[in-house]
Image 1 (cartoon, rainbow, N blue to C red):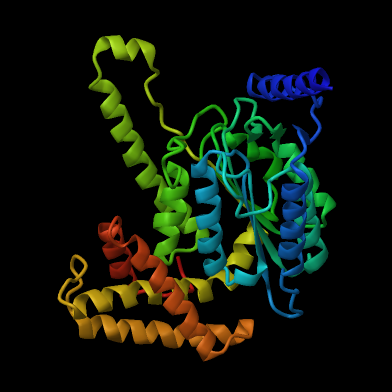
Image 2 (image 1 turned 60 degrees about the vertical axis):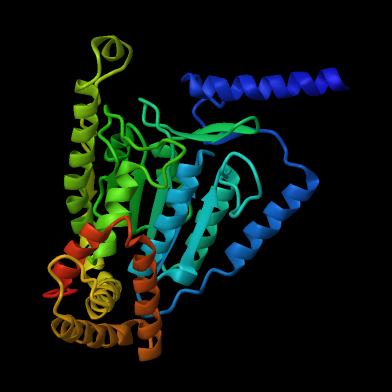
Length: 396
């Protein structure tokens, strides 16, 4: 018995290692080699997934609803942190708090906060979203973060338990089979530019962390974000920009951080340089389908107004307390701009069946989230708030 169990576990480890080394025991199919969880954990997982799927809010006829699926595929803590925080920012940006699902490979140990990112759970989440939406009316945003391979495959990895791959054609086929038509696909992984061509159609926006032949950076387990996720979600999108504009803004930050990496490499002694490769620019890629661009212009203004009002709430509180953000010391001027944005948000909210009370709660949640990062991002918050002083949520 024990010999058989040992051989089975050895086979699982060998299969996971084969994935990591470039082999594919599944012959190109979407899936993973997986050892069973304990009965207690398996039950918890089944109940958690069922509860989260059943809690997904219904589609509203006549309203363009956005559904978000955020997935961490590798069990280093940085990927779960990124998937979790990106889901919160995307949910606020698209007014999708009750239409958001998170799956995660976990943090390498301890209790799980989210359903596991197994291939079947990913398929179930897409299936539920596809069955819930009106494909002719609604938008689906899929964000995935993990390590990536030179052939474009994203690694599915729970150390000692599961190994597999998700390729661009797997995700494209799954979205199509689920009946999901209009979509945004955001991929944070090395070599993720491989996702551009399979999704280059009018009904898709694709944003990737790197070109097809480049690595991305910042995936150390100790970090909260990868470089790409930090720049796009934690910085640019918090500032009230539209998604595509936020992506364009994020490129400057990524370039700066990567230039710092190259400077650090150049300062190394020759012996260290021989053992390490000089970091090359990741060269993130995008494709913006015309149909999705038009839809984004209709559905983003409300979330953008809320985000910007949140920025100005933080700036106002700091100015009033005598600790202003850089260049933003005039509390009265900030308050006037904030009031204008709040009124605009209330105006926009009627199109998505939101009340003024809903708007006030959303702005309060946005400012609270910004306060949580204010210590580390004071300079960036000042830039965002300054931009919001003359902000029009229907442009940019």
